[in-house]
Length: 82
Image: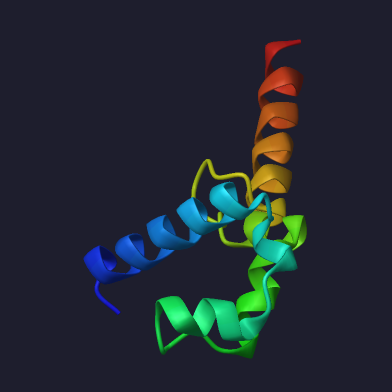
């Protein structure tokens, strides 16, 4: 899906959630599908912190492996500075 289409669909879902005082995780699949036909069962996987962080596995990102690499690098720098 093109970013523009995805952004539009998610924007509508956010507005729906605000209007109906619901969180994304409370919505049934049918509600997501009503905003865009390509939403499937996998939509549920995005509602976990571990999944969100795992998506940030880039240099300097907040993904677990990235953070562990940054910590290891910082420890090496501190050792060298002694």
